[in-house]
Structure formats: structure tokens, C-alpha cells
Length: 186
Image (spheres, rainbow, N blue to C red):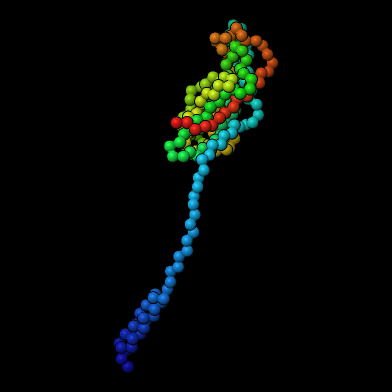
């Protein structure tokens, strides 16, 4: 028997079988179509929700009143803007006021938590009743995180008003509410 001929027939059959399998294989595709939508968002929160306490007292005869800044609060936000959009945060005293002869100041430290474009913080501002003052600007899409110390750290400083010191009177408690607003700006 001619083994060479038999081997060549055998190889031909193997090649033919491989071709037949390849020729009969099908590729089937299935598709899902979907739309992706990202909505604009501007959500803001101040933590903790407990009242902030600041105080002044005289410690040295002949000296001015010392004050105690408070940095216990954090402003948290989530912002999603459209193409080229920017946001700002403003603060104002909306109920009450700083006692006569004093000033209530606020500073927001830059955000170092979360991700995105957090914008810039303004220098320390003096809070006034019903007058919105910008504290953060050029905020774009970002989130600050929602842990206890995430976000922009807020520092309140209560101090003597050098221009109205003669109006200062002793009192036990004075309540003021500060409202923060996030809005679009150009």
C-alpha cells in the first residue's frame, strides 16, 4: 500500500473537514441601544447641624476683648454644570444680626476632598443681614465628599467693630442664622 498516497488523502480530508466547520460557523450580533443623560445638579449642605458658638471676653486689664474663632463647620456640595457653566456660593445673615459694636466674619478654606473643579475661595467676608456675599466662585462639576470633615472648612470670627465700639453692650445670648446659597454665575 502506498502510505504516501494514503497520508495525502488523510490530510486532504482533515483540511476539508476544517474548511467545512469554518464555512458553516455563524457569528450573530445583538445590540442594546441606550441614551445617557446627566442632569445638572447643585446640592449644598452645612455640617454639623448644631449651633456654632463664638464668644468674646476680657482677659487683660486695658486690653481689647479676645475672640474665639470657630472652625467646626464644613460646607459640602455636589455640582454638575453644563458646557462652560460655573457656580458660586454666597452667605448672608438671614435672621438676627451681629450685636452692635461687633462684626461676624466668615472664611471658607479651599476644598481638599472629593473630586472635580472646586473653584476659588474669596478672602474673609463680613456677614451682614440680608446681604449676600460671595465666598466661593468658579465652581464647575465636582463633589466634595460627605464625611464629617469633607468639603470647604468654614471659619467664623466674631470681633470688635473698631468703627462702632461705643455701641457695644453686654448681653447673654444673641442668635443669628447664616444662609448659604449656591447659584450659577458667568
